[in-house]
Length: 96
View: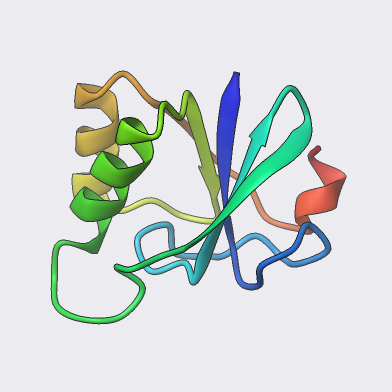
């Protein structure tokens, strides 16, 4: 299972980012091991961040996304792509 966790920094000691669409980074884990870090290209700019992030993560084969909060449009976009999501707060390393 591939899990993407929204992060405020680019390592697992960081806090989970509060906003899924505008998270600065996504840390990708597979079988509880870190496999990739993505700098979120949608973290700044105009609207549609959640939709862009949902597509980006689904295209990478992500099965589940974890973030502090998800916007309604991002939730729909994830559901349409068959990607689970979960709202959590705290340090990333506490969940992996």
